[in-house]
Length: 238
Image (tube, rainbow, N blue to C red; front, side, top):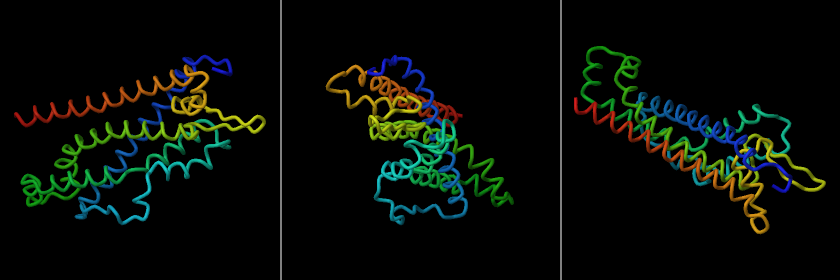
């Protein structure tokens, strides 16, 4: 690149930050949304709260950007501390669909005859959830996790285009320059996009790496869904 750094080395070094953020946030969203949805359904309130929040019409990317920007650019936090904060903020975004789908699945299982029979036999809510509801939620949560890996990667890419980098953005003023503290892939795309007219290869390689990772997460998501379908088909055939 224009600083003399090897692009492949920067991409490989930054890949761990990109993948770490994607899988940590996807897992956190799945667990938080799944737990909230299951609790809502077990409490007898499976209905959706969609449209009640005044922030419902604002894209989650916009909310995440304004929450992260003051802490990301020239942050006093370094390394894993800032990374953990960014993952925590991204984890609470877009929980509504996960909560709704998990609540609907839980409510459907609770109306099943075997759950009603267990309840009539004196089983408590904890027992019913552990032995009768949770096994059926595993499929729903795995599919949600797979979908969230793609969604989170796309959001990280959007943040990178707007120079909000995972791990921190370093800004200098003399001369005015931006740099990624970790070199994660979306950050490299954001850094090199201004070189599109003069040095296209600088953007081409990080962008190609991002597309490979995006394709990999999509294949990962479809593979998990296919594995669950086969397991369910085998279970139903018995």
